[in-house]
Every structure is written in structure tokens, then in C-alpha cells.
Length: 255
Image 1 (spheres, rainbow, N blue to C red):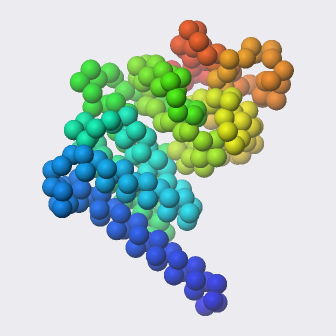
Image 2 (cartoon, rainbow, N blue to C red):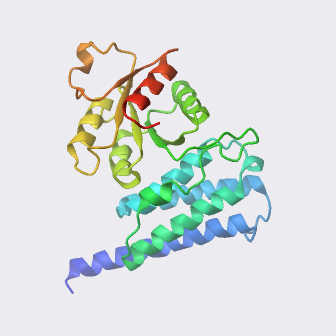
């Protein structure tokens, strides 16, 4: 074995050990075996810290399936404001699926994230005023903020399974793995613009048939949208957003 291969093998073994340790830590926290017992705030903090570490290692080693599920876990936890609101059975499902993705990578087994995604708990699915959650998965690529929260809430209230992604670079990596039923992208994004992301997804064979829509305050005739592919609908920010979404979903036969 060459020196380069030996180094790569050693690095992979270090990554395996790190991921295994973090997954065990998450399971211990959820099962109450950690040193802080049933302290929900410390359990919540530990879970978030371990999930962030796992996602970083998965990104570094291009373990796309593990990164996708860990992103979903972080996204699910994003709306949890305090430890007492942590729904442990739901988080355990995420950790179990993360463990499955990890083992598949270690042993070279196939792992279809797109199928697993729809078995994961939906955001807000454990609330008392629970609404019926459909099997339609929508990814919203938009920077965090008030507008993102409003749009996410509107789509959740329609019963869609929501995935929030705050970076177009992350979206390029996550869309091929998750293969959502719809990707809604904000035009104004750092790194790549929303239109750049649309064009990139349209250019890749694995994502070219996934329905896309662009959110913007611009009129459809604006010069700022001249590079947007003709078959990508535009959703306007404002009071008419809900009507635009309904029209687009009907047009694309997603409902």
C-alpha cells in the first residue's frame, strides 16, 4: 500500500472513531445515561453540539447520506427554544437513522437518503395542534430571518414536510441526496445566487427533473430574472405568496 493510501486510511479510521463516539454520546444523552441525567437543558445542548460535530466530519469526508440526515436533525432542532420542549422520541429516530447511514458508509453498503427522509419526524409534527402532514417534501433555500420563518410556517400549515437550508452551497450537496418533491429558492443569497443554484440544479442529470421555484420581490419581466430558465416559476414575496404557491403546485402536479 502506498504512503498516500496509508495516510487516507488512517484519516478515515480517525473519522470513524470520532463519528462513533459522537453517536454514542447522543444515544447516552437521550437515554438518560449521561452524567447530567434528566437535565433537559444539558441534554439539549449536548445533542446540538454532537449533531454539529457529526455534520462537520461527514462534510469533510463527503459522507453525503450522513450529512443529509444530520442536517435534517439540526433543522428539526432549530425551532426548539428550550430543553423542556425537546421531543426525545423524535430526536432518537434521527439518531437511529444517522447510525444507519454511518454504518452503511463504514461497511460500503447502499443507503437511499431520499427514502429515509420521508420516514423522519416532520418539523412541528409533535405539537398539540397537530395538522395532517403529507408525504410532499419541500426544501426552502433561504437565509434565516423573519421572511424565512413566515414562509416556512405557511408551508407547514399547508401540511408539507419542510426542510430549511440556509446556504446555496449546502443545497447543491443536499438536493441530490434528499431529492425533495420541490425546491423553493430565494433569489437573494450569498455565495451563489438563487438563479445560479437553479441553473446548477437544472444542469445536473440527478436533479434536473426536480421541480424548482424562485422567490423574489421582482416582477417576472425584470431584467434581474433574465437568466432564470423559462420553465421555473416565480413566487412573489408579499400577501399573494400563498396563492402563488398553490398555483405553482397545481401547475407542477405536486398537490
